[in-house]
Amino acid sequence: MSRILGRGNKKTELALLRLLRKLRITGWRRHVRMKGNPDFVFRKKQVVVLVDGCFWHGCPRHGHFPRTNRAFWTKKIRRNRERDKRTSAALREKGWTVLRIWEHELARKNEAKLERRIRAVF
Image 1 (cartoon, rainbow, N blue to C red):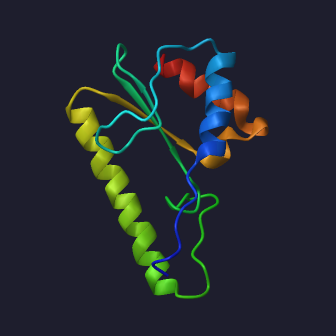
Image 2 (image 1 turned 180 degrees about the horizontal axis):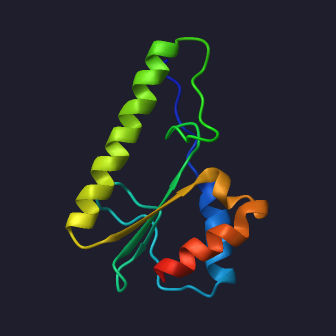
């Protein structure tokens, strides 16, 4: 199990990047070293955007626990969710606005709703 690694979230980051460009939202930085490793950081506006994978972060709609080694995966995903809550709280304490986006929200069929969420922050 320890050899199972995430493959990154390049596909989801690129989908969000496409949407930000479509909305003409600029000023982001990627790969900024700060708590939570946010996917996009808007320093001037003090906004961080984190894209959470449905499996790894336990999406209430699409997340699931594998049938094999269920105890391991249940514990792992719960720890991820707890870490996400702590990270968001710590960033908010420092004055950042935190926008968490689920992987499934980046699907084209959900784009209009996500656009409204993003515009509400910017």
